[in-house]
Image (cartoon, rainbow, N blue to C red):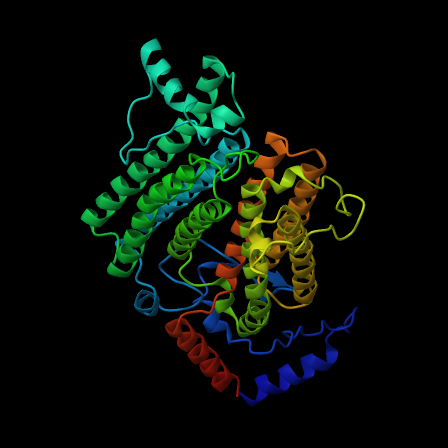
Length: 456
């Protein structure tokens, strides 16, 4: 044994010299709050991006899965957000159904805008909850046309309209109403089926029941709005049109239903936010969420102010930009009494409010984007921030173009669709920035505590 040890020692001195410098050992980069390697095993639902051969915890993208979320055990996830049970297949089915219903509501809002811009909303002078068949022969068409001829809109605006022109506006309003009733069937049928199959838990069932009730009430709100346009105007020079207050209520209700459906669909598809994977991203998301919430409120307020612009036909006045006519501030902004009425009924005030809110919204979105540019946010959050800025700029451009071109149907409907698109992107951003569930936070904290002990 001693002889072998001696030979090994001599071999080290007679071995040939290295022809190159010894390869330096690569050390792992220091990452604050980084867990030990065994913790990364629990991040299976994420696709990790490697930097210099090591996983960078600030660059993770979320996969569609309910079996493991952001390193949180399955039991913790189910405890936190028990929305859908029966596995991934059930989760995907319910999520796709809710996204489909959200898209249906989106199309309803756009179709409603086209109906208003073509002045078709007052063509049907009665309403039934379940609806009915359209006129099927010449006699029935004449009867419907006779009802419309007795309305204030026909006598003051469309006097002399022919039957063929009436058919166009009638079909527009009929399609809008029946499209809403179709949504009721598309929502109620699968809802009953998923409840019977046991996919939907009690919290989700209560939420969806409330949304279904709101959808049914939306038809009543729509008729309440239309009925105001069938009343005789107070003066002989006033044009018949629906109440701007009721129009704003109808649009706001549609936005609330849409946001409820879309948010619920996102919650089913992604029970935990992607920021729950990492303490750095969690802290950055918390900072941006505080700024994003008031921006989201500003986006919603601007959309509602647009309803008052539409209700007062304010888009057909002051068709210049950036000035309103020849001045920056038009006359008669506060001529109505009490003063508060000017913000809802005065054409000049309503349009000026909408302009100011639109520019303020764009500036706020730009400030939010700049504030988040250097933070270690999840790539999904950064993508949504970019989309929010781009959509806000496009929406302002659409609004200015619609005003300068005297509100053509194509641009007017695109502007209304753009408002809901911007609102959609902001909702997705808020959902991605939302606070993780307590169970997820506990699991994340315990993982990092365990990692710190192992490092020490």
